[in-house]
Length: 532
Ligand SMILES: O=P(O)(O)OC[C@H]1O[C@H](O)[C@H](O)[C@@H](O)[C@@H]1O
Image 1: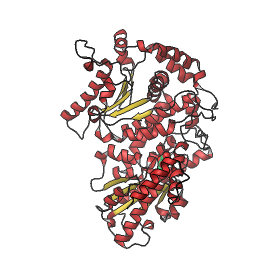
Image 2: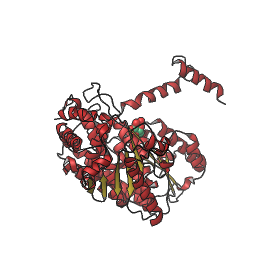
Image 3: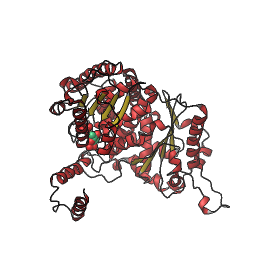
Image 4: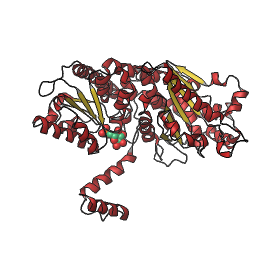
C-alpha cells in the first residue's frame, strides 16, 4: 500500500544527505579516482548493449551509501510493484499507469481492468501489423486507386514526439519508398507549405490524439481535409482511406468523420508521453516495419525486467534517478543537460523534456500538500558536437552547476569509422574536460577551467531498435523513481490546462478583451490594429 502523506525530507537518509551536502564543496572527482583506483570499474553498469558510466559524479562512497538508503527507506519498492500490478497510482485522475504492460511485460497481478488493457493492446497490435503491411506493400489504396507514397502524422506532445523521434532515430530501417512528415504546431505556414509539395491521391493522414479534442491537431487535420476536398473533389475525405485516427476516444474521432474501421484505440491508462508503445506507434510500424516496432517494444521490455530485478546499486534507472536527486535537492543544481552524440537522436532532448518536465514538474505531493523540496529538473540540451559550439562555454566556465548525460553509440553502421571516431572522441573529451578542467595560474583568469563538473556517459553498442527501446524505457523509469521518492504524481499534467482555457477564452472574446489583465488587453488590441 502506497503512503500518500509521507515527505522524503523525514527519512533518515535524506537528513544524512543534507549533512553530507554541507561539505560537498570539498569533493574533488579527480581525487576520488586517485583514492579509489577501481572507481571507473565499480561505478559502471552494463545491460544488453547499454553501458552507464557514472564514475564522474560528485559522489563519494558515503554519499552513495546514503542515496541507496534513500531508495530503501522510500516507498520505491512498493510503488514499483504497484506500477507493474496496474494499480491506480495516478491518484488525481483515478487511473492505472499501464504503459509497461503494452510492451509485453507481465503484470504482477492481473485484475480485470489490467486484462482489458492487455487485450485491447493485443487487438491494436493485430491492426497495426495489418495496416502497416498493407501500406508498405502498396495494397492500401487512396480514393483514386493509387497506393500511398506520403504519410502525414498529425499529433502534438505525446501524440507526436515519440513517433517522430523513433522514425528519425531508426531511419536506417525506414521503408525506402515511403515519405513521412510530422506536423504538430498550429502554425498554418507549416502544414500549408507541406501540402503544396504532396500529391493528395497518394497521401495518408494519421490523426493521433489521445483525447481527440486537441486544438492544434484538429485544426491541422481540418487543413488536410480541405486540401483533399479542393484537390480531389471528395465530399468527406476523412471517412476515406486517406485518414486514420488514433485515440482513446473513438466517439470523438467518429464525430470528426473518420470511418470506424480506420480508428485505432488505446486505453486511457496510457499517458500521452508514455504512448509510443500503443496504437500511437502505428506510424513507426508503417515507416520502419512491424518487426522493427516489435523490436523496440522488446528492448523496452528488457529494461522493464532490469528495473524490476536488479538491486538499486546495479539498477540503471535507479542510479540515474538517485544522482539526479543528489544534484537537484542537495547541491541545488536545478537542470540536467542531455547531449546525444548522434544526430539521429536530435529530438531526444525535446522528447525527454516532455517526459520528465510534464511528469515531475509538480509542487504538491500525492496527498495534495505542498512540497518543501525541489521536484523535477529542467531538462535541456541538443546534439553534440553542435552544442559544443553553442552552450558548452557555460558548462565549462559558467557559474551554474549543470550535470550532463552524454549519450553515444560505439558503432554506427550508417556512418564511417573516421567521422564516427571524431564524434565519439569529442564526447569522451568533453566529459573528461568537464571533470578535469585546467588550472594553470600562469595563464590569464579567462583561461581558467575549474573542472569538477559531473557527467554520466551512456554508451550504446549501436542504435538498434532494441537498444533504442531500452534507452526510452530507461528514462521513463528514471522519471518514475524520482517521482516516487518525491511522492508526487508523475502521471497527471493539470499544469497545462489553464493556458488552454485562457486561449479558448481569448479566441471567443476577440472583440472585447477588456476583462483581461491590462497587458494582455493592450497586446490583443495592438495585434487587432496590425492585422491585415
Ligand atoms: O494526445 P492529445 O490528447 O492530443 O494531447 C496531446 C498533448 O497535449 C496536452 O496538452 C498534454 O500536455 C500532453 O500530455 C499531450 O501529449
